[in-house]
Amino acid sequence: MTSRHERTPASSTEGWLQEIFLQHKNRKRRIRNQVLTVQLSLLVLFFAWWEIAGRLKWIDVLLFSYPSKIFANIWSNIVSGELWAHLGITVGETVVGFLLGTLVGTLLAILIWWSPFLNKVLDPYMVVFNSMPKVALGPIFIVMFGAGFTAIVVTTLSITVIVTTLVVYNSFNEVDSNLIKVVRTFGGSKRQVFQRVILPASYPAIVSTLKVNVGMAWVGVIVGEFLVAKAGLGYLIMYGFQVFNFTLVLSSLLIIAVVATAMYQIVVYVERKLLTHR
Image (cartoon, rainbow, N blue to C red):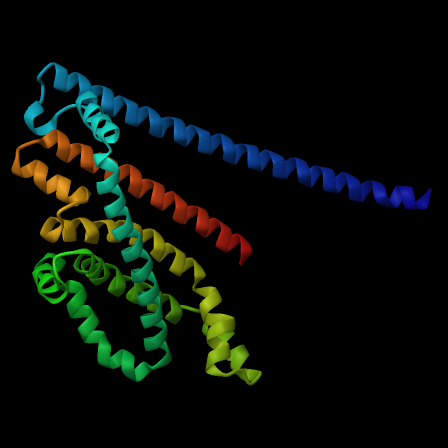
């Protein structure tokens, strides 16, 4: 009898907590569904207005086209197989630039954190290089690496590496100094401080940098393709401008938006997994 009476309050409390948790989870799901519904509704309304404005000549269809014409252009390129070749080239360049930019930038941040002297030496150079217009550097990269894949990837790295380095390095410096003192009090080396305190505490900043680098990588690749490419979505945009085929231009921009969004969602998924594991 005693053991039964002792378990009853505990089980009641547990059931109450589970009910609160389920209510909170359902509320979050409901809000998420409402946000998604509003987002999709705004997108549909925008395309509907665009289609009507184009059909009724409220806008200049030569410049702005309209959705049905753009989707027809995309579908014809899919059927002919031409789109896949251009899309594959651009996505490949973007993924390489994205991964290398994040990796090199993070390693450089670790290096200058490890050596304060090196940080002082490189700091003005990084600030100046980050402020330079990367389009102006494009021709130099073309001369150095040739008009091809390497020049485009290097153009992308010129955008992503410095941003990654600055963000990650600042996150290293913002780690709670008391945690570092605790490790050093117990005889921890600089390597152990970095492994046990600095790096784990900087995971959110590093993952956030991945999100930023998705957009930066696409900017770098498209700029590079504007300058040197003979294939890819950036090439299609430039070609569309040259022949005044703005439907092709907008089709390429729409494809870039869809693929970039997909890449961003992949990064968000990786972030959720990493932070949950952490």
